[in-house]
Length: 278
Image 1 (cartoon, one colour):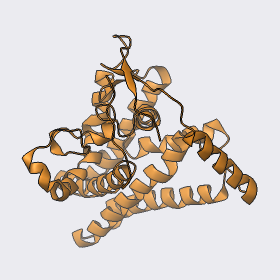
Image 2 (image 1 turned 30 degrees about the horizontal axis):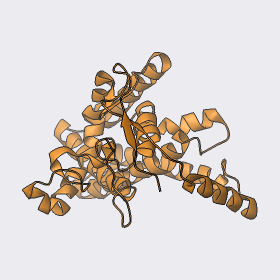
Image 3 (image 1 turned 135 degrees about the vertical axis):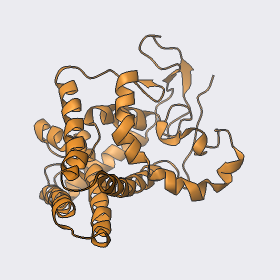
């Protein structure tokens, strides 16, 4: 278990308003790593480049493009299109959790270029692997459940996700209305969230370097590809309002599924929520 952090001011030009300094050393991470290493030694399994991973990736990507083609070009009626759009949303969430996540963590392959390609599947489904590195790889794993620093447990006035946040009267109903708001998570991410972070140079209260060079090219190309795939191509064959309606349905499924998984990393029995000392 990580000990409670203390605070110290950081450089004003590059740091968040409060920069955390962790004191003490926990044996948890070392013990966990040792047990994982022992598991692979005892079972003889590979840590990376497993054939099962490649098979799973092939199934997910084939399903994604197959469902997309079916939805855009072949489904003749709305009552058939609805389950296809829901299935497309589920597969999209699966790509995010099972392909790009492992690639971005350098856990997919021993070859860096394969990890990068797998991480870039996030661009295909509307995100940014560049931003994800900071939002998840750095901030999520560093500041988990620390109020004021972990953006995953900060939804503003809409919900109270830690005991240190102000409680408003309507929060008593959040176990009901938050399901609806979860559906907007992916839509916000697609339409405004990533762009806002790039423009502001911040993710929540944490500074992030704006992409340059090939990172910027990849960010722009990813957004152009996603917008073309989701809006431009379908609108060549269907009315704009139909395209927006089914986009909203599929994206809502993505948002609900991903948010449930995100919350399992934070709000489970036994989880602790801390605030910095000082």
